[in-house]
Image 1 (cartoon, rainbow, N blue to C red):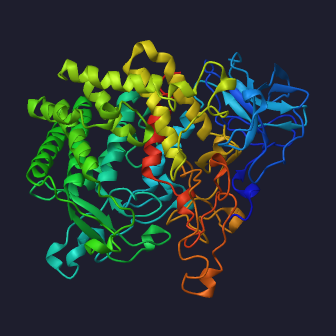
Image 2: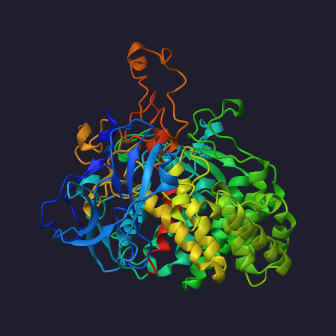
Length: 637
């Protein structure tokens, strides 16, 4: 676990994905930040010079701006362009980052190459590329994380790499292949074969509603940019003639199908044991009862997958998925109010999995609406169309006239409905008017990005109204709001460029100058996250960061949770954690605590009671949002 902020990330100075650096680079500066993966030739390119004024690094930067900022060829040192710093808001300190910021614009540099920003020739930014394919390596790494997250599937060295090879997990006696009902664990008749699926996040549990959402996200990524997803990802299914994204989706669907009962209901959650590596886990697996929310979300995944696989020429598989979707819909119609709260003492389920997957009444209603959208698309049945229209006025998008990232999935689904050939014109207009009005008019959306970059709401050009647990996933969904706005309206095609700014943030244009993906050094990234909270790659394991005694670190491509200003120690601290040894772990790290919002991050993985999962845990939901956004900028330069 990291002790200081300046060791919060891997520093792989002087690396480059393609070519060894041929001249001696000056020292890497934390005060010059860029998208470390690079920029496509035709896109805007803004590097940032920063002077920290508030936070753990306050006063550590240069006292004055450099006399000269130069974009140089990183391989030869030859100057390419003199850069003129433009102060954000006349030198004001930004509250969200604690920094003063200057923008360095080199958008007119379009020649492919490997570049670096130099400050007086004595300090430099990370090295980066300009090329059409700069984001392909990140998309590949991000999608491969789902292979590492597979439960009940051997990760052989040929596909996982020698460092992360592991046997199939959770297939022992009493585990996923014969999981029992949590509320009747002594009853052998409740055993079900529920093997497979993806570890949800840093925990190995599987939550039906969330899992179904990941499938829908990945399918939207594929639908929007099929050319971005080939058949060469380096997973066992590669080379079979089907996109590897669809192969991964099918792996997820197989587990979702096992969770469906003969009556159409879908079990809500599978709680499992944890160990590092995952194959070492030996404890029993337990499932939670079917619920309306889990079944609705599974229906959406089955139905949308049926449409996509039918379009891919897999008609028999699509037909089987359609039956599953309609059976799930019928179950929800007969059981609309059935809930299941896991890990909740009040419901007798304490200890079943971790996060609470059950939805409130609004969430359950919206889950049913989303299922209706995809079932209507698949079947054309007017009953599903009418179900969407009946609840449309209850959606926050329409009722509030507000689009925001915390409901991006629903907003995206509504736009999807509006674009279907059989959608009622009035409903489609209502959806589009609400979405366009909010994206174009709400302060947190397009108005936060004026043409004059110096007046942007966020000097790092990726404004977020609220930084919370999982802010990196929220950043990706905020970017998708702009991308979806552009995709829905050819007259707003330029808005997609705003979505790209959120990728730049995740790749390094942020106050910490960190690429928030794990272990991207081999891709030429000089400062990426080297440890995260994960049951496999945890503190003290061989997969911990080498700087903390680990041998290998985590695999590439996991998007960690990100800055979280609400982070704090466990409630047992400072003196109620059960023993003096536990109490001694109640060390409040700064960062992430006590910082401006965008600096509320540290790459460490100490578990309870420091609860690093609030900052550095991955989630498949963060990953799918990132993949969906990134794919739009990989397929078409």
